[in-house]
Amino acid sequence: EVQMVASGGGLVQPGGSLRLSCAASGFTFNNHNMNWVRQTPGMGPEWVSYIRNTGEVMYYADSVKGRFTISRDNARDSLFLQMNSLRAEDTAIYYCARGFQNAFDMWGQGTMVTVSS
Amino acid sequence: EIVLTQSPGTLSLSPGERASFSCRASQTVSSSNLAWYQQKPGQTPRLLIYGAYNRATDIPDRFSGSGSGADFTLTISRLEPEDFAVYYCQHYGSARWTFGQGTKVEVK
Image 1 (cartoon, chains in turn green, purple):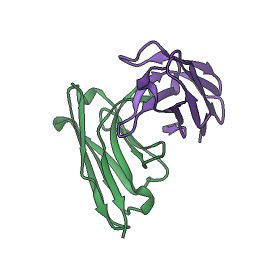
Image 2 (cartoon, one colour):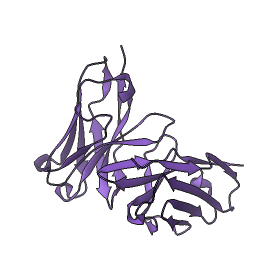
Image 3 (cartoon, chains in turn purple, orange):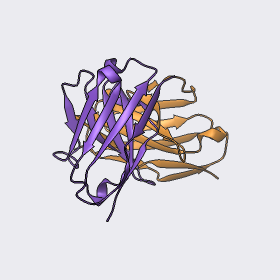
């Protein structure tokens, strides 16, 4: 069974940092491109970042470019998102999502990030 | 940046009825880069359709996607009780993924 378990969310002050992790199992992790997608309750999803299966190519949404860094460890089937200079508008549930045909075919259960003083 | 506009915002229907809703892109897009998702309260989005027309794994054949250019449609031929949810379209292009704002299908 495919599983992706995200962790590392929490309450942080504006300007602070968090590092999210996503542990994958049930599929060959290094065969798949991976993404972070976030969603504010009651709103549509917002794509945040992409990393190719090899880890050599990364893309970012304009809203997070220069503040967030995506990475992966294929030896440990893990995906990461380092989030710096956090803002109130970064408050959301963050999902790791597996890439498939320019869409997202599997989603982890999400971790909540709240940026507030 | 491509903007996706979904309509209507809410669709009120009864089980057994046909549901059809729209996703309009701000410019012509490739059909291969258009997808649809279903999301129920408290759950993660579920991929229904990719490449505009292709059903994802284990998706029932009452779900179908159509369209081309800038106008795409998701159709549910006969609504089952479990189909009442929010539906999102999504586009990929130029190293960006964007979502529409969603259509809610509610029980009439």
